[in-house]
Image 1 (tube, one colour):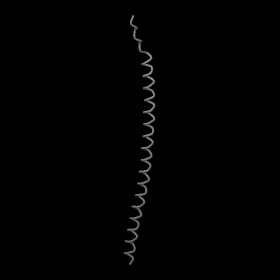
Image 2 (tube, helix red, strand yellow):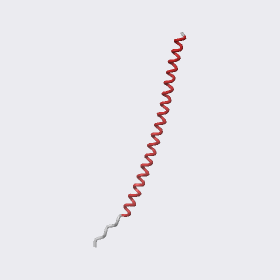
Image 3 (cartoon, helix red, strand yellow):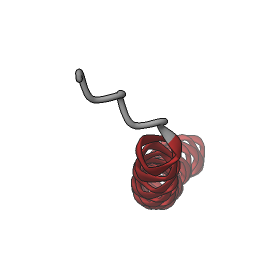
Image 4 (cartoon, helix red, strand yellow):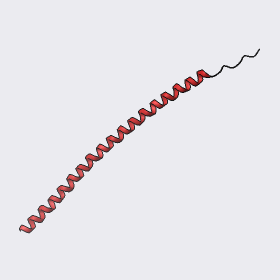
Length: 72
C-alpha cells in the first residue's frame, strides 16, 4: 500500500514537472515571437528610411543634370 502510494506520487510529480516545463516553453516561445515582430518592425523602418534617402539623392542627381543645348 505504501509503495503504491509513493509510486503514484512520483508519477504525479513527474507529470506536474512536465506540465510546468511546457508552460515555461510556451511563455518563452511567445517572448521570442514578440522579439521577432519587433525586429521586423525595426527592419521595415530602416528600409523606409533608406528609400527616403535614396529618393532624396535621386532628386539631387536630377537637379545637377546639365540642360541640353538648343538647336539654332
